[in-house]
Figure 1 (cartoon, rainbow, N blue to C red):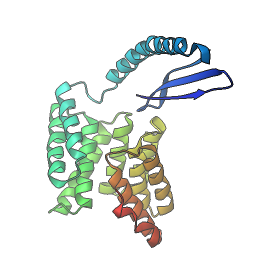
Figure 2 (cartoon, rainbow, N blue to C red):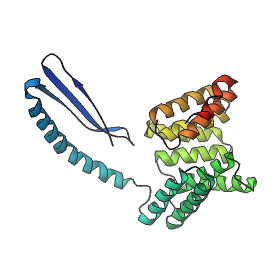
Figure 3 (cartoon, rainbow, N blue to C red):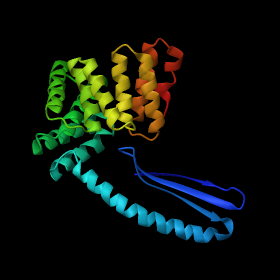
Figure 4 (spheres, rainbow, N blue to C red):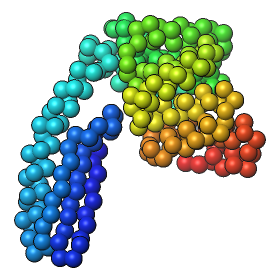
Length: 257
């Protein structure tokens, strides 16, 4: 969840507006406006607090019910392995990534139809290949393709899963058009998903469209400035500029923190 609001002071009056937004789905949960004289500012404070709590509580409850209904698996132990895998995946080092892969595989053992776990296992293989951590490249390509196809076979309309399996399909099968189509479908479901923007950028680089890639990566960085995968977005931006022949623009990106 995230909140937005504003305060305006025309003359001796004050107007406060507020919104509560489901950051994952981009949906508005609650919005209201409050007007008062500055002489009654403490009464306004009490009114605002009472209204917000009263209005938000049922909205949050409904949102949590909907979120629970759309969890990627109905098996709690599989979801636990998946979340632990995500935490170690985002460490970004080879040891953490290998731990993540084992956890994603255990999630699929608990739930053979857990599409997000297949998609993230494929994402691990891509980044391991990208970083030169693999010994048997052909085996990695074969397993990555298997995971991508399995994710498609059991797939649901989940934006994260669509993004990761589209990226895997492009990288391990070489089907760039289908890969970007899946990522664009994810963006229709969740236009605020930074991973879809930046992984789409990587696929655009592979398609020979670095200018489009730069735009996608820039949007990802603007929309999620504290993202755990920011360094990957910066790496992709450098690569896109290199592919576009813009060497001066590419040079600063690897040094950014």
